[in-house]
Length: 319
Ligand code: F6P
Figure 1 (tube, rainbow, N blue to C red):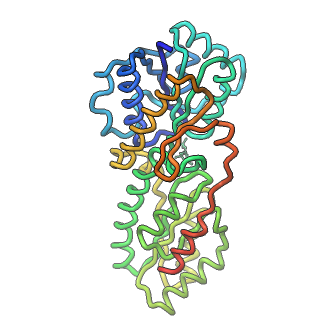
Figure 2 (cartoon, rainbow, N blue to C red):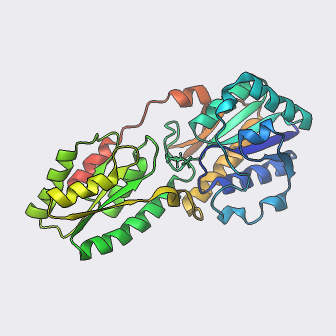
């Protein structure tokens, strides 16, 4: 293998740039030419591909976002669309591809491998919803962003005898909510795993206010569960707290990556290059119990959802 490509796909995540840098520099050190594909799978289909040199990735380890741009391309499911991508790769002589993204991006990588282009996936998403790896690139930075903001909300909630309802991202995964809930000392955490029962949430808040005498409360809830502004109104109506809702939104996707994300991304990028060089394809990189490894994408996509029950129990003991 002489030439490899790299693309970022799906929602961006802090640390993607650090992974791009690692792929480019590890690849060049191993004697490969490395090509950047711009705007995810769209760039493959539209031939938006350019050779990257060491200097092209200077200083990007500290930057959030992705210098390659990212996109979600539903049509990549269609074989005729993927055929264009394969033809463009062949035109450049690119035989292997590193795909940084979430599970949707992995499916594209698997399909391309089946069409003769060896692909290695790198888990890059703030959601931490790829169960074959303990951590995805971007999760730690997003978590720290949530912590920083919830800490600020706690200051003002405490001055005004309020309950702050904070909606965090995660798509269908509750990891940002549970990790943020524990690390900010939130009173209530609601995720898909806990389920949502409005009456129970209100009762719990009343317990904290009336029995425990709390002056304020933080409720962290995963997105796509309920309307948090309506919930805040209900809190004002049915508990001793006044409720206010904050949707953290895309702020969680930005920012300079934490040390942890930079290291993880660097290890993943380097591992992906090694995997391509040893002829692997249709596999993805992950970290399990501190060990960086690769596994089949099919197996990764089949890995059962991790239960966070022990973390919820820990939270319950401390709140
Ligand atoms: O997958 C990352 C993520 O930020 C999810 O947490 C969120 O549900 C989604 O992407 C938002 O997507 P978009 O940026 O397309 O609005």
